[in-house]
Image 1 (cartoon, one colour):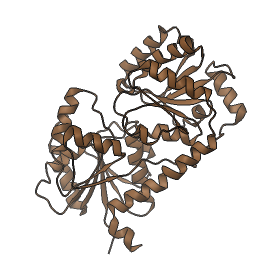
Image 2 (image 1 turned 30 degrees about the horizontal axis):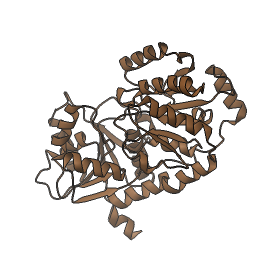
Image 3 (image 1 turned 135 degrees about the horizontal axis):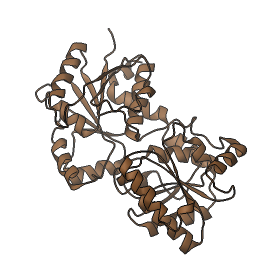
Image 4 (image 1 turned 120 degrees about the vertical axis):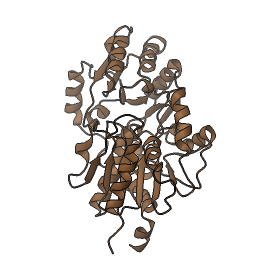
Length: 376
C-alpha cells in the first residue's frame, strides 16, 4: 500500500521566515519519498527555486483577494490525487479552502501559524473571522507557547487538537567562525566600516512592522548617551516605498554615517560573522524568529523586542529583551550586550540542542503522518 500524500498550501513563496520554513518542510517530505504536493495561491514566488526540482507544484492564482473559487479548484485537485491530508501555512489560506470542506469529515487539516500580533485593527477583525473556520477535527500547530496563549485570549482560539512545535534551523550551515579574518576584514572594507568598530546587524524584510526606524533612533541614543559608536547594518529588501522612507529617515539621523543598507542576500552568514550583536526592533509580526536562531547559531548574542516567543529563546546567556517601539530600551540592551563577553560556541550549541532543523522536521512528520512513523 502506498504511503499517504500531503498537500502543502501557502499564499506564495515570497522572502520570509514562514516561507523558508514551508520550503524546508516540503523538501524534507520529498527527500524522504513522501511525494508532497505544493499549492500556491500567487505567482509572486521569489523563493520558488529553493524547492527541490522534483516537487509537484500547482499555482491556483486568485483574481482578487476573496476569490472563493480557488477553494473549489483546490478541492478538485485534492480529489483527483486522492489526497486526504492538507497542511496550510497562514490562517487566510486555511480559511479559503475550509469553506469548501465544511461537511467533509475525511480530510485532515493542519493549520500552521507563523504570526501573532496583527499589524492593524482591520487585520485583527479579519483574523477573528478567519479563525472561526477552525473546526474540532482540525489541528492547529503553534510555533511557541506565547503565540498559543496570545491567540487564545485575543481570538478565543482554543482548538481541540493543538501542538507547539518550535522553529528549527540548519545548525551545521549556520556555524561559528566562518568567513575567516581576511573575509571579515574585506567585507567590512566594502561596507566602509573600520575593522575595529562594533557592528549591530538587523537581518529582516524591509516592511513597516519590522520597526527599522526605531533601530535608527536607538543608534542615535547609543552614540550620544552611551558614547558607543557602533554601526547599524540593515540587510534585507521589501516594500519599495518603505525602503525609500527608511533610507530618507536614516539620512537625516546624526548617526547617518554609521547606518548601512544591504539588499536581500541569499547567504547572510558573512554578515553574521562581521557582527557583534544581532537585533530585531519589530513591534508586531514576529513570533519565533528564524533569523534570530540563525544568528545565535552563528555565535552572535541577540537583542530582540519582547514580542511573540522572544522570551522563550532569550535569556542571560543568549541576549537581552527590549520594549517594542522604545528606542531607549533598545539602545540600552545594545550597550549592555556590547559590554558582555559571550561564548560563540556555547550560543551555537544552545541552538543545536533546542532548535535544530532535524528535530523540528521530525516533530512535524510525527504530527502529519503518525501512523507511518509508528510503523517505521
